[in-house]
Image (cartoon, rainbow, N blue to C red; front, side, top):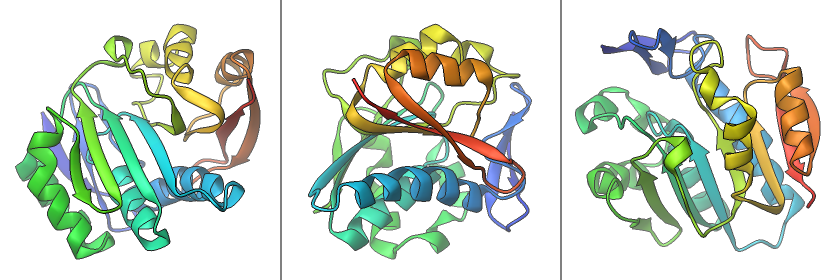
Length: 224
């Protein structure tokens, strides 16, 4: 069963009773998404590559689409073209997405176009506007394949205590193969095993301040 719950910053998330986990931090879904993925991931990459005209993002765990919506709005404001792929084994229904109330956090045209194309994005790549293309791979991470490499990877799987198979060395290696040299990998978590796995895959790893409720998180840049 999936139900909507309000988090500490007033934004909503989903609780999956089968997994026993929330889709976002109970300390604030919006603040977590902005801090971990937008500020520490997307903005960091764009600031390091100030002349970039387009950016590609792969998200592991598309979920409610909050990370995508904030990314699309950010790229629109900076006039950077965005090619976004989300991996989601169990897509959220459109009615549930509408009920999340995320329209108040992004521009009206991004929200309205997302609502219009969401069902089709589960089948094919769709265009939101002049700056954004979206495709959601209805797939488990282990089954996902792509000839594309990405500038940024958002790793937003459920916590390792709930889904340890998403955080083992095989899963991380499968994910990092899709990251370009110079690309950025970000996730809300940080453990010794995760740091060692990412470093062994040719990435420079750093600990950075975490979102509310977490002292640290991981960001890595692929060197080779």
